[in-house]
Length: 319
Ligand code: UT7
Image: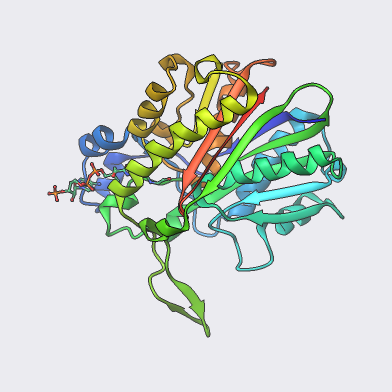
């Protein structure tokens, strides 16, 4: 029994915000710096009041429509987010309510930028076990709300959005192999350390990052988890048809691609237009490449993510 992707969907709020737009809004930066260090040219930012759940619903409905699945048929809903609408209940339960599904298992996964990969792998294990048949896996984020807009080293990197996949139990190959890892000794290199306490915010409620430490760790773990995942499926990394990596920085993506011996045209990149949308980045990129016809049925696709925790993971699937 395999978990097979039957539909994909995505949503980006508002219109693209350029690097020059950020500079015009008072961020002490330049288009040249951002493009050279990250490859990012645009990102989308949610309107005040636009939430992860609202964006998740739009992406989810698109994925379900492509799959030909109705919301009431779902028996599993997982949302990966680090920017949930509420502390509780989970965004997955809120999404379930918005979609009009009753009774499905629904919960959130918190693994920051590798959250979607974690959620996908969990859904795969539910489906393979035989306990669930039709799953919806969503990554949805409004990182613009947890950015310190005075800190140019971080605020230029991120964007908002949501991406979704519908999965179904199938005899035909779907997800072939996967790997998930974490290293809790690296909690401090990428975090939002604040908390709500007695009605007040305690500590620092903004995203803080040691950029170079994150960069080096990301490059190391993404190449090794790609290798691990391909080995588990009995193929070489160079044999995948598409790499859909987490979209944080074009230099991280390029370095992973080279280590995997993959041709540049086999890599899906959206970082230039989306920035880093955290848990939404991989399903948004997958959705783009599926909808524009690059990723076709029967091709091998390697998805991978890396983020705060430190967490990382990969899933190899036949689309
Ligand atoms: O999902 C995972 C999330 N995070 C990542 O993947 C990020 C990984 N890290 C990175 O991508 C890079 O470390 C950054 C793009 C964040 C930073 O690039 P860097 O080459 O490591 O630059 P840096 O932090 O060492 O800063 C170099 C210079 C500094 O100026 P001085 O001290 O050399 O005069 C910064 O103040 O660049 C300056 N700088 C900026 N200048 C213009 C930092 N941010 C900006 C900015 N615009 N936005």
